[in-house]
Image (cartoon, rainbow, N blue to C red; front, top):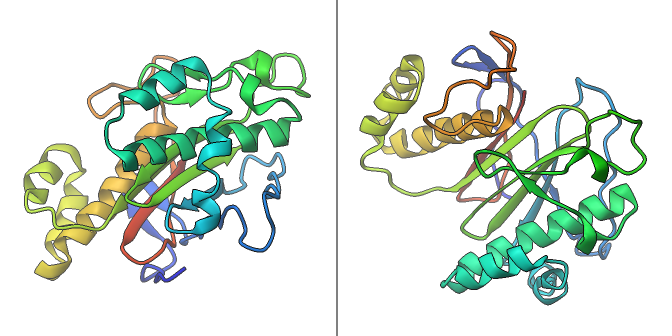
Length: 252
């Protein structure tokens, strides 16, 4: 993957530390078929497992039909409502890969997995789907994002995870959006960049914002969940992605 690590190993995004950049695992491996990436150990401090599908890769496009067979009736209905082919492929690949990977790790039928939807559209497994878990233990956490040709999936065995990916593009209205939704220090940091880097800087900050909100189970304009401890910290990671993309992952 052609990408460049951000300058510096750590920075701050609001009150949340931004860790050193990490690279998602490309899946399926061009030489390894559909072998599952290793499931991370149950350590709260572990970084999320990130899996990347790129629609430009022949082995990914070859999955469109077989992964489509794993969708449930509600997912098939949603797929039919997407009019653009690329939107349909992104949704199908994301949801189908999510089912196949979770089913493989949990040792159950991917098509039979029950995927609930949180209050802001985040898919989640109900506790009864956590096969092999102790009674009362939460199921694995996960999140999905897609943009352009990339589909990004994030997983963690214990902690809520959020991911976001954006295709690089000009954002002429970035300043108004940043002033409304980003912390003041983020907006000032972007303004300090050379003008030609404003859009890239904004998209990187936006990915961190979205990943953090998804990890916490929030929407852009929602308050913190009632059961979330005050001052709960996020961990954030910028991502090493193919040229033309920026992304972030977060753990709550």
